[in-house]
Length: 399
Image (cartoon, rainbow, N blue to C red; front, top):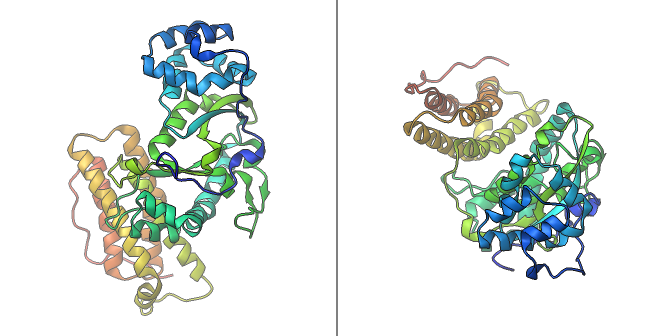
């Protein structure tokens, strides 16, 4: 283990040939050159010099180390020159503040249609994400435990859901697409069998080799760098050369800092995100029963006890913790508008359909009541109202 980070043996996404790593320069001893003058010599003058001048010495040293090999990369220079001048200071600061284990590459971002991006996301959530969690445990359980993941978190991942502790509190990690799904071009539209999984073909951007298991803060920093390049303005089919932060090749597709692992409370929307996997897992289990078992009020309880009860117990821990976090945030004042919107959308897309599924498949009334109660708690906190107890039982409709 190196510098407190985990290393995997997975093939990384750079084998796709889309990410261009810098090559060593042989002509300038950059450590001896003024950083602003060095950038100006490569065509990056004002406002880059002003931004560099406003940095602390530590930030300048970090920026120098991060970018020294890119000074001979025309794509890097072009991407920098293409920045909105108002974003230059933020971009250089974000690069300087990248955590250890990350490096810069240049790549071509090619926007796919919103419909295709959604199809990639649905496939990721329904198949690739659960399989990646399972594969991490299968191949790297010892390293995960050494980093600090508890037994409960390991079992959550083995079941194909995000790692939480036994109270439903998420660890500070994310799965990131190295090549971005919205800008993956052919990787987001072409399917092939994933060598790590076999089975049916999946979009190449959803192959295991294109994922990195990273700290949530690192993921946010990567997204900041992306956002400062105005990727949201790239039109469907348009290509744009960009600078992207990725894990250094030596780390493969897992870069975890045990000191920051958690678990710990985060923003309401991020907490709610960890409720998506358990809800999706249960929904898929019911769909697999279609054509195999007939659910009636009489046998619903037995099927629940036999197959559903354990994953349901995990789901309730995650969603009840989500309700706790949302209520706590609401107690400090109105929840920020975008946070409020994201939590509501997660409830609408995952919790509400699961409640309807529990009614349709005649699950026990007490289990249904728990789902309805947690939904009411979250809704009340988001709306500023006081939660009221749900009616006893709830109403189920016949299938």
